[in-house]
Length: 172
Image (cartoon, rainbow, N blue to C red; front, side):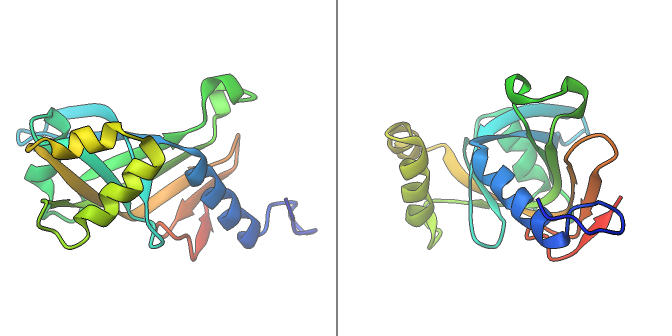
């Protein structure tokens, strides 16, 4: 990783690449949502992402997290997500690499013009299970669009992210 001579911190470009690689290594995310009465819920879901940095989840409309996302979908911020380094590969359990985003949410029914494209991408990544889930009438695609986030790469190494594509890193 390239670091500047002044402060021995990684360059903006190397951090952007590190965050992109970290995102691509993950298969699922931890989802934090709120119910209609503001009861918090933690759950998880497998995901895919697009070139703009949006996350796509295929979820049952009967699941509590889906109901929460649906309820908050027209709000500025609807949920928070966490991508975190596996415990087994972390050098220190207290300093696991992690990426968090606050997100806006939109749900897609089967009539959405990009439904089949996203289903195909999900199937490429996760296999035949997607075909079965997509055939069930209660499943929808949820598009989570990051508004802001934070990347922590270790002790004393936290970086605020202006948006999903990280055009501007602000050292925390």
